Length: 224
Figure (tube, one colour):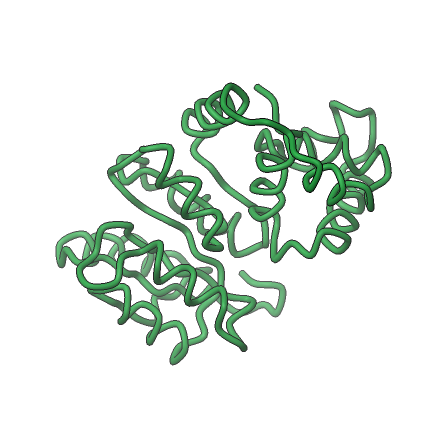
């Protein structure tokens, strides 16, 4: 359920009818999730987001005309859709897709070979405002960026607004850790960890937790 006590509203965007039907059958039996729209293209996904104002859009990357990454960016930039979270679903685990999706505004990334329980968990996590990345993708993505990046002056200047503790928390967010895991790593309560994450988001102008992951990569804080 959402904070308001109503079911999590979901739009399913995929150009394969069998995939959409499968997702809908899986989601419709859940008491706390409701499918409120379907889309076969990226453009339709944006239109459904505007019409239905869902909590989560399940977005395939490969769709005709407007792909899932472009559609995600348009949803993130559209006034009034700030609370819509995009969960990217794909058969592709190419690093470039992952980072492009996050930069465009996606809140999570999950492979289509994930089991039903993993998908349901992902929807609930993203609807609650958390970021979600498939662990094997996160580890490889961080390693790739760590090997290739150069920390820039602009990155350091951007981080200057953070306290040392907030920088430490941001680094762990970039590794995909939850508030509970961050708290354990830094000997903080989960509530205190959550507060530091919220402060970092506000100071850095991050739309959500996933955008903190992008910032952690771009500024050199995320390490394997």
